[in-house]
Image 1 (cartoon, rainbow over the protein chains, first blue to last red):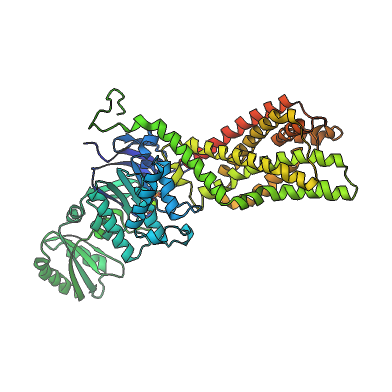
Image 2: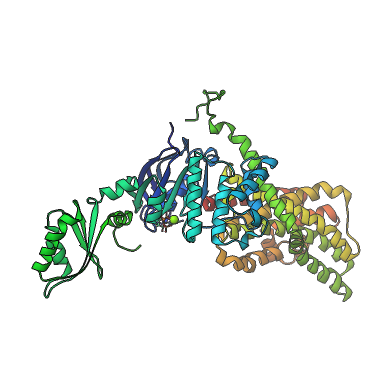
Length: 319
Length: 277
Ligand SMILES: Nc1ncnc2c1ncn2[C@@H]1O[C@H](COP(=O)(O)OP(=O)(O)OP(=O)(O)O)[C@@H](O)[C@H]1O
Ligand SMILES: [Mg+2]
């Protein structure tokens, strides 16, 4: 079976830039999958989507959508995918209904087909009674829904969603998640980008974490969190004793059996990543703390989240 | 991957590349229809945009100055063809340049058309075609309106083929220049187009004066000879008022063809650079 998306050694360097925006990226998305590209700002997510949707010229490597080479055969590829970009690009000279109908026309739908289809999609996306107003009147959430409806007009095999839920309220976000799952059940492959960990964990069958244009990890959300230093974390709110500091404390705590590693978040708790159950580690940890006359004010046991994986892989630096 | 030897048979998945060409034709027509539809929807805006400025020009130069005795009746008949040329040229230029600047930046409206299944350069070609259509429409509107303002309009049936050829080619040149500007100028510099490009183009295009009347102003004659609009004005005058001394029509046609090809080549290249990062 041909992969829905296949990216191999993809490199993109924008003109007049001295670093690669995408730097040797490779991954494959299976048909019917919801695939998440997770990464901090500037990681190269939109650039990757841009190459896959024929809007960005690759500097090197290969990219295929539903078996079609998007670099060499972009016209054929455009029939097989649809994209909802990060920024609104609705046609403001047209009404919402006409936005859908003209999109259908660009893709060769007959007049009756495109109007029937537009009506059905407007209904499905809850826009039926606002279908003939000005697009400018639409709120961000409505515009987002309209863009997904538009994308579905030509029945793509692969749908690219670039940060589909950024700026949406909880209702719209839930609605969006529901729609995306719905699309999958109809056999559409969905590739979405996000920097929202909860969303990636909730939505995606598999998640690729990218930073600086490179793939850092690729697995199911569960697989990724499991890979992070065991199963559990222990957050300790501690005031170090006189002449002691958090970094030295962390060093001492890392020696406790069952602690994989630890880190002191500035101004926050000390976080220990464990490779056993937290309750077996707790007693020795408290012993170390009282041995160094540190005061423990709060303890929190929890499982590592995708956010921990994300921060662990991409660091805390701002871009 | 695009095996042409595996003929699509019943039940077999069709190779998507097989029907790439018909899709491009359909997409092109749909995109053109979108632009014509939008033009129709904003027809009065379009009319005001193309007709108002030339109309005032015609009124002041041919009517008001004539009433004051500063210009002769003949001048009105000489000015009308020039104004028609100017209108067609500017309409074509503005049809492409201003919307393109916006659609590529703030509104990103053009993206949906860039993702239609047709080669990207055809989206630029569609803009040129639309511009020529709108320019011809504006020229057709200008003649009767001009006649109404002036009370009469010059007419010369034998000149119609030259008139049509000149207007089509001249609009194409205007559209090509519009495409070049529209893809080169960032939106923050949109007013600069008016100040430093459109105004000189308008007044060095031999629209308000025949080129050969500049014989005594050699330097200005050279400057106007560099403006493709001059050849459009001369061609239209040659077609409508052949008695006025003019540049030979074949030279006009040749220069317009060359400028059209050159500006299209530069414009399409700029368009591709903007469309595909
Ligand atoms: N048109 C462009 N010209 C030059 N550099 C660009 C262009 N577009 C993006 N970049 C650069 O490429 C890098 C990757 O950008 P990209 O938009 O792909 O990131 P992203 O992962 O989508 O980020 P975000 O989460 O902020 O949307 C960034 O360093 C950005 O500055
Ligand atoms: Mg992005």
